[in-house]
Amino acid sequence: MAMTTCPNCGEPISEKAKKCVHCGTVLIEEEKKICPDCGAELKEGADTCPKCGCPIEPERGGEISPQQVEVTGVKITQKSKKMIIIAIIAVIAVAIIAAVGVQTHKKNEAAKAAAQAKKLSKEYGENLNTAAYSMLSGASDAETCGNLVKQVWNNAIYEKSDSETNKFTKPKGYFVSDFNDALENLYADSDFNSQIDEINDNKDLVNSLMKELKNPPKEYKEVYASLSKMYDAYISLTNLATDPTGSLQTFSQNFNDADSNTVNCYNALKVYLEDE
Image 1 (cartoon, helix red, strand yellow):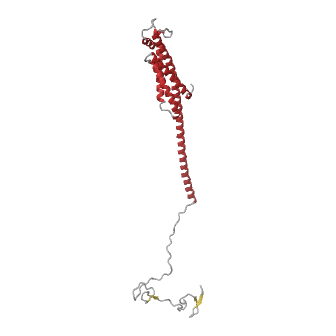
Image 2: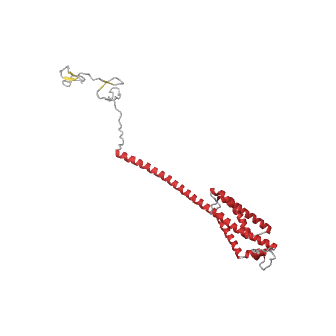
Image 3: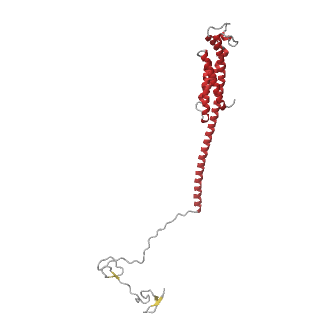
């Protein structure tokens, strides 16, 4: 700030001083305050015009700066940052482990289901094999018995002697008067009756197996269809052997047809079966 001297006393003062601080000489006249409405001169510090009553606004010493609002940020320490990162990693790890666990569980369940399906399929195949060979065995016994029935029946009607049938057709040395008597003698024979019991037991076994096989897996549907055809022929054959009906001619025809059908069905099914 530049200095000057008082024109009255010669003492050094600021060139911006309004009066000398040494002698009191007024150097710069202060501006008079005037009422903005009536123009009357106002006294220093007046807040109202004494002439017209107009309110006088106080002079502002400068622009008022708007109030500054200090925003205090949340300070995160390095340790806190590490803890947050660790927590985030832990959450992600748990999510990954859970997802992997779910997938592993699904794979395990799928593997169990596949193993169970494979086991059931194997069991089904074994039962189907057993049923087919049981029918073949029962059909063979029925064929033996049925052929003997035809032979006894024929020899009783036509009075033909035969070492195998004589004990049924001519038990007392002469032929029976009715072929039904010869057949009754045959079915009363203990050895023949045992064979009939075996055929019936075999039939019970086959019926039980067919019940278990009635809902085949997809891979066995075609095989089961062939097995069902063999079963129908087998039932016809065994029923004729255990309970012959009709005339000799109709019985023989029906029996021969059932016997041939059983063999043909077995040959068609044989390609699907495992050798025993």
